[in-house]
Length: 469
Image (tube, rainbow, N blue to C red; front, side):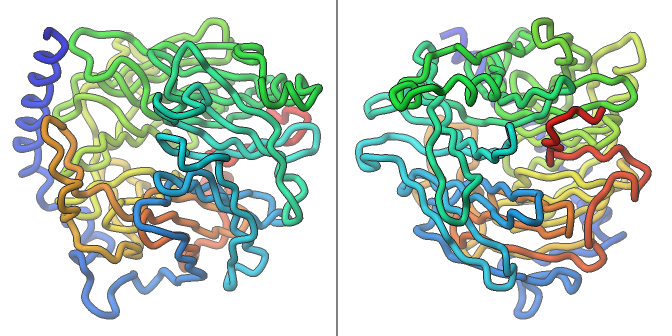
């Protein structure tokens, strides 16, 4: 009962904070006027996308709600993107972009006995080890069906387009339900690490150990649990937390300090840890007590680690921009306010995002894909958009009427994932209903940090066998 009371109180506080906060944000258009204004949904004829965005390719993939996140390979000689399939179709599709204007699905993997499984695939990540490329598909299977102990399935995709091969499954029997989110990161030691949500921690797996430990066909199926689990990143516990664990995270190298930094959303807000020494994660920054923020969802830093974008996953909430420097450099390690906000549409919800300074590419659910410029973090503004969503805005019928839930389910449709290929600036988007999209933005022909006076740090990892840092 105590937890229920706390959650109810948190919901009321959140709703009050949103209502109080919205008037100050209502001219989200004030920021947009500096750039461009995205039209309301559905857009008028001819205004589905801004004039500086061109559609390269589009592939419908299946039933509405069956598409989740997306990941694109960064090596131009490996022109593949991976789209997670969920709900009615559990697995992933491989898209061949060797001719981006004629993209096509070349492989579809689905879990065996698909009808027996209860749950979904989540997001997918890539890594390279010993000259071979691997794809990790996060899994979140509920009890009542098979594989509720499977957190992720690893595939060798080196030999695409001819074949892909399942290597093994990461099982966690002590924490059933799988991994809601995963992230692959090349540690400064050179080790490929998989970070995964699990209970009150982000679990860290040594994927070199996972791959090198495979010796037999049976071992590939019944992988020894915890052999490659090398660390756990805790979440700082505070009274009245919205959740006890992480929802999402990002890991990046910080050039100025030489630290590997973990950026996690969950709990009561956002958290930054130094994970250079995996055995001893050090809490560097908390972002707690921010008006309107009862927990953190998605959290992404800029390449220099000075700023970060936080998302909360509730309708009407904008993306907030936080200045991390006061907490990193001063005695007070908590930040309790944002320095900037951005929203595509005030009654919608911006979701996953990719930072390629000064641009932030956003999968904004029913608003589609939107790009904003945060060169001035206190005054971000929209520079491009394309509405990938065909449905009726803010109306999912029975799906939006879940009693006792704090979420506004009517907005959870449309653009789910976004990724950027740095070498040529190709933008790929996964829309839950309309499938796969590829775009180009005028003037954005590649991304390298040095072109902007920034470290060359993004979600795209450098998998060279020898550490370059």
